[in-house]
Amino acid sequence: MPEKTIYSDLTLLGGKSDLPRSPEEARIERVPNPQKDARYAVRFTAPEFTSLCPLTGQPDFAHLVIDYVPSGWLVESKSLKLYLGSFRNHGAFHEDCTVAIGRRLADLLEPEWLRIGGYWYPRGGIPIDVFYQTGEPPRDVWLPDQGVPAYRGRG
Image 1 (cartoon, rainbow, N blue to C red):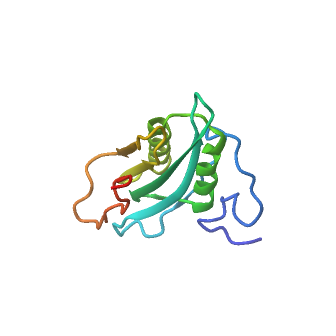
Image 2 (cartoon, helix red, strand yellow):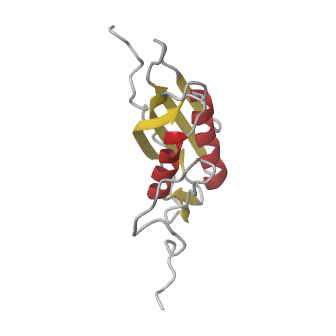
Image 3 (cartoon, rainbow, N blue to C red):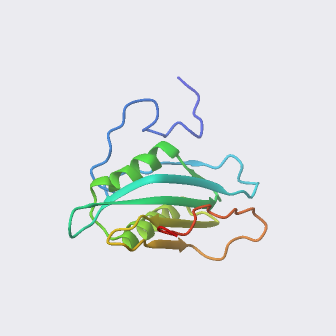
């Protein structure tokens, strides 16, 4: 019998995984943080995030940047990728998508701190950027700028 590790309960790694039909059906997995005595930041960048306009059904595109300072848990990256992919056929406004992702991750991971920047590409000539965070950023952890320039159009 294989030895139990912090990764033993993961179910999505090591094989084919279908994209969940909706964010509600998506399962996000977590693992215990093996470096919980260290304070550090984790960043996930999803430059090709897509969802649907809930009224027109047209696709919306965003560049998401998720930063968090873990406490007891880390998010398993394949499950996060599948969760984000589940928005591809989900109709919601930009604000709803961005904040829902941030809140779900904060609820699951119980991080010391989390922020998400949703940098949405223009539709109808107006880009929408949405930002959510769980509180004041920690002062003693390096948190680089999210690195996504403000939209300039033809600038």
